[in-house]
Image 1 (tube, rainbow, N blue to C red):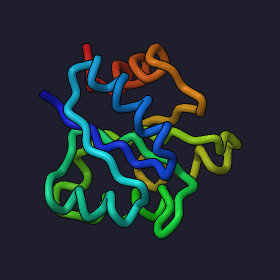
Image 2 (image 1 turned 90 degrees about the horizontal axis):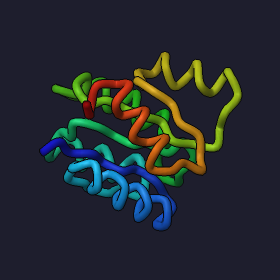
Image 3 (image 1 turned 90 degrees about the vertical axis):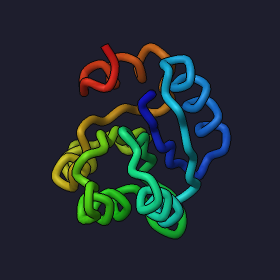
Amino acid sequence: MKSCLIVDDSKVIRMVAKKILQELQFSTAEAEDGKSALDACKQTMPDAVLLDWNMPVMNGIEFLRELRKLPGGETPVVVFCTTENDIEHIQEAIEAGANEYIMKPFDSEILQAKFAQVGLID
């Protein structure tokens, strides 16, 4: 079973994402900010990370840059999930190592399509 770390400061978003991902046969873990997400990745590197941009303590882009420096940190497929949709933000995310980008609000169909696009599901 593939694993996905859901990183978002919104409990509701984490809950929705968890439900969708479990339906897609993923085991899930959650973090409410980039710092705790980084700590989680140091313990167990997930197959995928669903990542919010705007969070306290350490934001999504800072987390992503740090993740990619970790041993094995190049492996997880990172899908940014955010309200930041201007081209500068998208470009910055891709340059920092994001694999894909989805807009909030998202639903099961959108998440499934993106995860298929990046090869996480068939």
